[in-house]
Length: 544
Figure 1: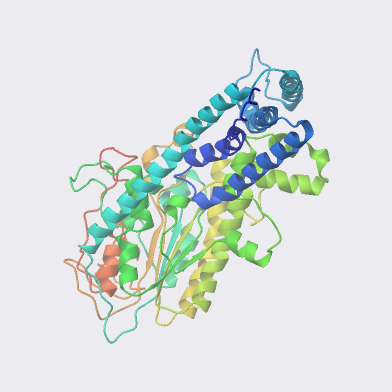
Figure 2 (figure 1 turned 135 degrees about the vertical axis):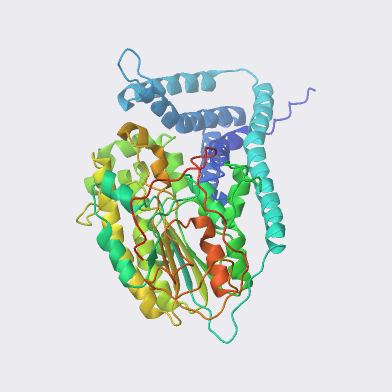
């Protein structure tokens, strides 16, 4: 009596089902949180499992059911990739990246291969073992990439915290209430002379309004770096990124820079001072601070209000664009016209979610002043007036990018100016004692400098404005005279000067209000990761 062969354990369809999602997470791990991909990962696994159970029930053969499931998974997750690839590489001036070309091809191949699998009489156990092994090996690569990145992050965070702990020199003022501190980072907000010369817009009225409210506007200010990662890592740690060499270069690696942004010296100082740390969602994982008391995100807040409404996140939008879902999205008759338009906007354009975050932040900042007691530190990194362009000169929402990039940029600035004035008025009115307010660009305009014939060094010029209420405390650093906000006496207001750069922003704040002894560094700027030290010509004189 012969023994019937033991059935081979089938696992590869389920591993193939989660591999595309896991690989996309690994590829974007520096830009997203792991939780953003959990829903897609779970749904992909459940879909694969359900499909396998259905096919196994229909034909009673586990090996064939596994092959058919794997075929479906392959076609679903490869469709968008192949469509985009063929669209970008036309053959004889004809693009194969069209649904009317790819759908018949995919359908035909699927029917042929599925028929072969269904009709075969061969023993598939050896193939099953091979595919099990192959799927396991395939999964090792993204898992290793994700784990490796997380380990690097932990090590960088530990090293940074040790370095910060050794240099922390701040304390709360005695016999005087500590002020709320608002750091409003307007991403890509250029200096006034750039706005006038290249964007054709007069920014003087806005700056004059700030000055009349007690702000000091550093008319000749530059960013220390033209890249957001470099600029924010430097600002939040009050140092240059040259590893102490004094050379005009960025030495720190990407993981270290992100750690310096997430949990830098500025954050640690305010935490040690007992401040409530409040941040707002920017849309970028590496700009998101860790260990804050409040983090306001429009998507999370909306989900709480509308519990049953399901919204896809940015990662899921990216995933859908690589799958057969792209076909469904591109066929308008599967939905009514209004829903089709809305779905297309959400998935194919980052503008909708970007606009949502910008408007939310501009609305939320004054609400924080009214609802959360101090002392608090509020960090709002608003990706604006940085593209994509979301409003026109009349403050109407844009659905597409305007053809005139420079005019569109000016429109963004005009809209932002009006909102910032409203915010400033509320912050000052609702705060007691008067708050510290910094409104600052991380770098200049995000435009195509070479294509427009503009020297890329102009990307260094930034908006940099300070509202510093008077104080009688603080360890005065050499050469700094602590005068009150709104002083127009150039001889007295020497704590601020027209060429101050962001590396000195919080050095000045901690020395002025929190008994720090940092002093100011020499103001230096470079382009990119490495360039000669660069100083832009400034047409302004000291106006404040």
